[in-house]
Length: 204
Image (cartoon, rainbow, N blue to C red; front, side, top):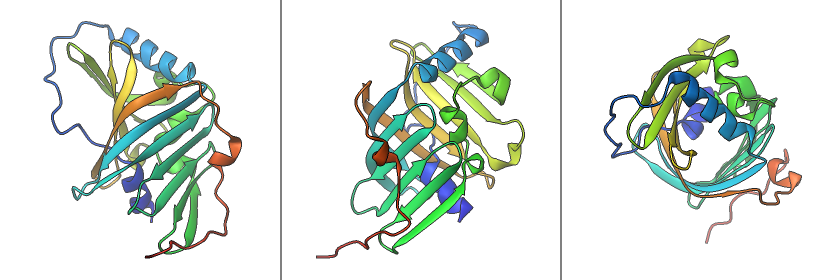
């Protein structure tokens, strides 16, 4: 089930990634920009496209209310909704009428929901890469490196998250690319709650 959860979150490289060029920013600047991007977010909404390790594609809407809360709402026919806070990740499957909870530390998402995001202090930086228009930061948990790693790709101007890739403990990648970003909108706390009792999917 943990493997399944990692697949829900995992993201890979875009299908047509830009070629990397000579480094223009220092590593310190890249990490400062990445930390600042997340730490200045109050609320966030974006559309996403996910490509899992088998090549299956899902779409949906992602929400974040920092610090500590995120929601990934998959569009039909995918029956999954995922809600995360700093303690747990909750996976709702409307097809099987199940709700499963996992420790937040079981996915790298917990790094992004921390009260203060500081990749240098709280994560092991695996690599920093950049091209003319993008930077990529790959990191993993210092205490649980075997849980996998996350690659975050940002546009430089304006500095903004474009995609992330979570690689699970088995080395499998799942890809999610973000678009139509909106910041500072009103998001109810109830959006980040999943009841233990859910209604099964209706089938026509």
